[in-house]
Length: 131
Image 1 (cartoon, rainbow, N blue to C red):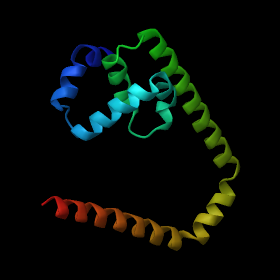
Image 2: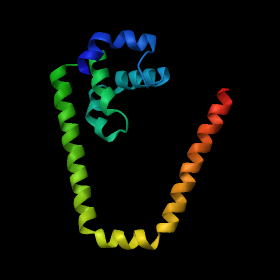
Image 3: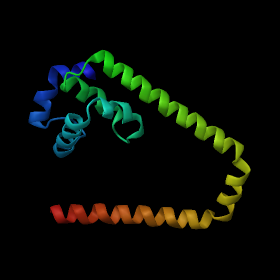
């Protein structure tokens, strides 16, 4: 993705022709990258939806491929360490978690349904406004 960004990125950004990504989102990501650069690469594993586009924008901005790789590796290591730690915490407290899930399962289900309903209503209203 780095080299795709390096070779074709500016052209794709100007045209706004990247499949499955809105032009506004492309411009937003480009602004973030101009502002944060290597720091964004370092944090990318913890930012939803950025993993695949980080390498692309690294190429677009022609950042050093070696530094990009090192920062990506550090980010991946930190993310994996966090996930392993989370797994250990959950594993050591599985009985307690099971108790709370069983005790509050109906409340959790109701809350989940309510959140999904709110999201769907917002999507519906946005689409209705656009039309």
